[in-house]
Structure formats: structure tokens, C-alpha cells
Length: 259
Image (cartoon, rainbow, N blue to C red):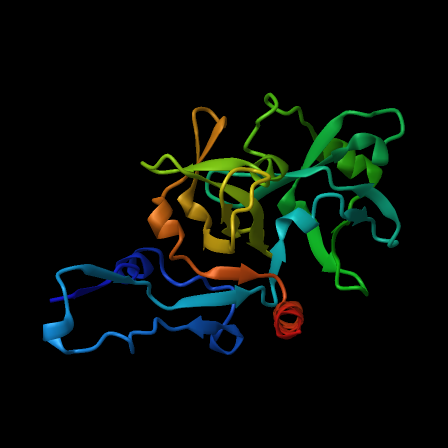
């Protein structure tokens, strides 16, 4: 008799559904079991693997893509752009600790990179709905608050720019995934990582969303590991940045296939 195995249900209980969108913003793809007849006489002893429902989730209000912050502007109280963001430092607890920029943007006779606590900056959105940071400090206050920053080698995975684009090994598996982006909230909490199966530059299929606490930095900030197996990773929800763009892309693909 055939044995029907639902392999992803337990993984969903372990990791939980990605919370980037509510029910109205999700598209569920249910496993089709209609072809499995109940006539035992026609069945052989074999396993049939059926994946659990997979949702497509999208960004919601209050969530931002961290890769969009690299290069974003920093303004002062007058609205003048006084710097651009070089990077962000992520703490062990998954929160953005500091923002890194070149001090020459504020103080003409300095060109070293410096860091300001994320809590000292306000996250704003411009008229084009693009994120930026605002700092409400005088030059004197900045001079006493800023700290000098120097990256710890080439692969300093404290930095968002180093994690984004990094190849992360699966826990206990030979495979790996590429971290494409990090999703954070306006209070500086990094909630999710977006990754595709495969090495950097390879065709890895659908982008998957996983809780950021499954991304582990090991060996003194030198290695990135996803604390899940490849099989578990492939059961995680798919991700799109924008629902409308995703629907348009699906429509364009359908139209092309129909021609």
C-alpha cells in the first residue's frame, strides 16, 4: 500500500510562518492529492512525498529591505543631505546597533569611517517612498557621539553589506544558500533573511524567507551558517518585495507562455 508522507508540516511548526504579510497578502499553493486513488489493488509499496502548502509573502508597512539602506542619504534638521550610509552594524541579538558613514560628510578635515548609534537617527521616508535617516545633532554633538570604525578584515559579518551576498552553508548538509537581503523593522530589529538555494551567482530558484535567528555567524564573524537543513529550507515560504509587481510579472509570464 502506498504511504502518503507530508514532509514539511513539522518544519512549519518548528520555524513558524513568515510574518511579512497578513492573510490577505498571501497566496497559498495547496498540495494536490486528488490523483492518489484509494484502490489498494492498484497500489505498490512505495513512498509518495507531498509538500505542505507554501505561501508567498510580501513586505508590509513598517518593514524595510536593508539592502535599500546602503547608500541611502542622511539628512540634518534643515533637510540637507549631509552624508550617505556606508553600512550598518548588526549586533548578536539581531538588532541594528550602529550606522557607518564617512566622517568627511560632516567634518571636512576627516575622511575616516565613523559610526553613530542607530537609536540616535530617525528612519524617514521621502516623497518617492524611499527610506533615509535623519540626524538631529549639531556638529559639536556629532563630534562627541561618533566613534571611529574600521572593518575587521574582508569578511566582517557584523556588517549588513557583508551578510547580504554571502554564501551560507546549511547546518549538517553540503549544500549552501545565498543571502540576498535582510528585512528589518523601523525600530532596528532584523526579523528575516531572504535567501536562494545555491552559491553566489548561480541560478538558485525561488527566494525563501527565514527568521533571522536561523542565520548564525560563526568562527569569530568569519562564516555564515543557516541553522536548518536544505530540505527544511526548501519548505520555507517564498518571498516577493511587492505584491503588485509580482502579480504583473506573473501576468507577463502567462501571456508569454500563451503566445
